[in-house]
Length: 376
Ligand SMILES: Nc1ncnc2c1ncn2[C@@H]1O[C@H](COP(=O)(O)OP(=O)(O)O)[C@@H](O)[C@H]1O
Ligand SMILES: [Mg+2]
Image 1 (cartoon, rainbow, N blue to C red):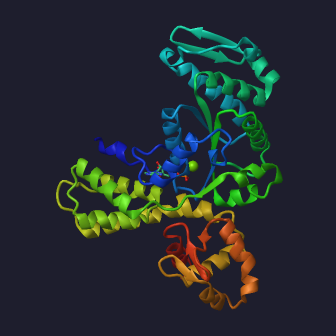
Image 2 (image 1 turned 60 degrees about the horizontal axis):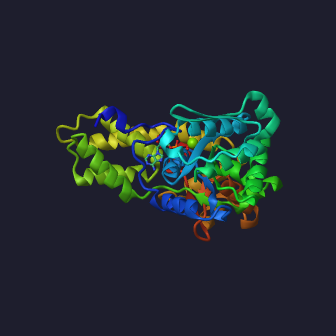
Image 3 (image 1 turned 180 degrees about the horizontal axis):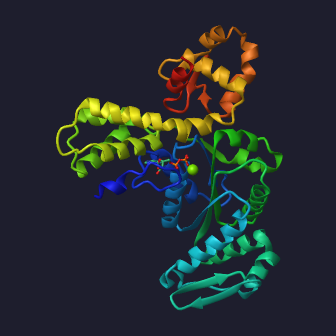
């Protein structure tokens, strides 16, 4: 295994291996096996930057292909709808001929299409003029039909969904119409908690409220430990079980940090001889420092200065990323009623969660410690 390609701390890339997420992926595969139109076939992944939304969408794309779906992934933006149509056609044209031998073409369906079976594959294309004429809804509907003839479904994967988007409204409307026509279609979407709380309030996007919402949390420390253990062994590192466990716990199950710590270990130490715990601690701490720019800053950017003040107070009274509401109120010298709107805003932004009454938990690892250090 080449050490340089194993860990890649960045955003939007496909990891060399998906660690954890077994439940999410099993549920996803089960949802594809359900009847077209099933509510579970619309999935919404919600989570902070670096928690692994894009990586999960990419893995869903790969698994869907094996389950008989043509899957396309786009990032939301003005050209999203045209891209969806283009990408489905590309996927279709890339299919080897063998998979399409039982294609039945129905000419009536193909009006507005250029359709031909060429050499090694099937060639379906809308000319630019046709694309405008038939529109997104009709184009997608026709592609669904062509694929259905080959017993293939369509999976749309939309990353980084945004509030107030005309494209998303059009997509939602089309998806619902195609479901109404029993097309074999499914959709997976991903977005940040802060944008999601806006989007879920949009009346035209009620289908998102009906979609299965999956709040992505950290992956289990155990799965990180298993992964690190096998990877570092393959790379020839001499790390003890206790050291592997130390590294795994330091990631707190946050996929970006899993990549970052792994990457820094490979870059900073020569694992052929024994490594001291001090060197590992140093690498962990340098990795955590890197989170300030890549993770904390973008997560805090949408918050008002008052929100930040409240969040700072929660951080100050927190231990291991957990704080009691009662301690927070005392620190802020305010009553619960006054605190509630801020609590809601921070929950909506996804920077804290409240798994139990009276308790607040930081959702981004090391953010509480970072704020404590900033405020001290
Ligand atoms: N389950 C996972 N196992 C291993 N690495 C992961 C996993 N999920 C994400 N990553 C890696 O973590 C980093 C951040 O993930 P990404 O999917 O870009 O997060 P998000 O889209 O939520 O901001 C990327 O380098 C990605 O490859
Ligand atoms: Mg992403």
